[in-house]
Amino acid sequence: MELKDFTILDINNGLKKKNFSCFEICKLYFERIEKEDKKIFSFLTLNIENALSDARKIDEKISKLSPSELDLLPFLTGVPFAVKDNILVENLRCTAGSKMLENYIAPYDATVIKKLKEVGAIVIGKTNLDEFAMGSSTENSFFGPTRNPLDLNRVPGGSSGGSAAAVAANLCVFSLGSDTGGSIRQPASFCGVVGLKPTYGSVSRYGLIAFASSLDQIGPITKNVEDAKIIFEIIKGKDPFDATSLEYMSDVNNKEIKDVVIGIPKNYFVKGIDKNVENVIRDAIKKYENLGCTFLEIDLPHTEYALPCYYIIAPSEASSNLARYDGIRYGYSKSFNEYDNLFDYYLKSRGEGFGKEVRRRIMIGTYSLSSGYYDAYYLKAQKVRAKIKQDFDEAFKVVDFIFTPVSPTTAFLLGERVNNPISMYLADIFTVAVSLSGLPALSIPVGYVNNLPVGLQIIGKPFQEYEIFRIAKMYDNL
Amino acid sequence: MISKEKIKEISYLARLYIKEEELDKIGNELSSILDYFNKLKEVDVSNVDPLSHVFSLRNYTRTDTPRVLDKEKINKILSLSNKKEKGFIKINSVFDKWN
Image (cartoon, rainbow over all chains, first blue to last red):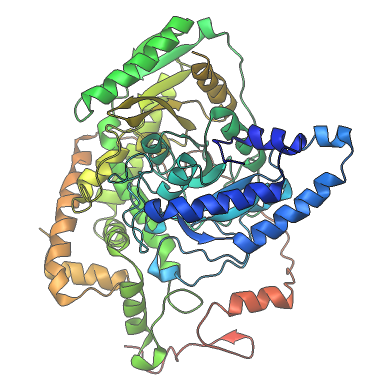
């Protein structure tokens, strides 16, 4: 049997019809990873033994089901998936792409993993990322860069680059990523797959290695919109272990397509955007127009401040979150005997355990929060954040969705931006404002420029993930 | 331009060792990033409340009952540290040589 571009429903149907067993499917994925991932390097750790033994257990369970029970086999039972290596899976190494956590073995499951395991999904491995999810290209991993499966000279985007590349290269059925300023949407766009950044608070962050807690969300990376919906359905909801998670109150209006109004922010199609990318997005817009949607040019006047605002707030939160890596309870550490005092011990353990970009962001964050600079940077950024959110609140009074490109360019070359932090940060220019406002957004592939995929970002109102799925699915039928 | 001294001060606050010869380079990078942040000066934020969290947060409380972890779990957590004794994580003395 050959491994095809299997979606969740393909696996579910195959298992129901007994076309293949869960064990066979898992084995095929591992064989494929063995063969293909040498070039791509999307996986950091494989879970071969556990996955295969779990698959056998599931096959046994399936064999005992009556035909009517088999018919109701939950969608995710026996579906192999990959997990970004900043989400904890019990007993598996969890590195966050850092030397700091090179040997860290997760002592418990993240809530999203617990939920997915409960419905029978199978973790096949952990995927590469920019160190502590800080980056837009997966080049900042301590373990080496992941390559874009569509063009090995190019980056897969980041920071969930390993997760997006693994789905695009058919090395798993779906994967989980995390998104702080675009880290699910941008790699999904660069690799031509679907990625969802859920409404802030709708998915538990328990067991996600914290980067910027007021922005971080876990979400699915999938081959199509239906799969993203199936996974979101399982992972959403309030969790007593994450006090910022919320009871998910789905906001559905089921408006007819001819009554749907979509906003196009005029400031998103100005400087910096690649002309060809713009054309692909405009073509996608035209297709929706043909369906009967109304498009409205909208103004999000504070758009140009979103990037500097984000790059103050996220590093500030990171500098505080990453203070926990003290080299004592876990993580990279120096030998105590070499140091006279704890202060030196901290300096050296942290100075050597963290990579360049992480150190850079800890420094920016510490500076922005330090006495004398707090008002000018951190407090100012929080106020600008309020203005940015207000822009969206105003826009959503008149529109149902907002469409933008996910990123101003297609996947760039490895090494092209790595020495220029600001040019790297620009890859997130269309995604960070959404994160700062806590809104849900989906990236779907809508075309190509020189054989490289272009993603459309569909932004919705808070808790309107299902509305986003509905409108995104229409694109498949165009 | 941020001074070498300032970079050193921030690196101590952040508990990050930076080699003497790297101070200038990091100072340059930080300066250009901070210049970029100055764009925010253009925004009038008078009468705007800072937004630290997108949805109004409230405190969730729970009864303070101890959760009993099984031995296996405790060992898993302890095994992550490099020095332990009698079920505790061991570190150098904090007060003796603290400067």
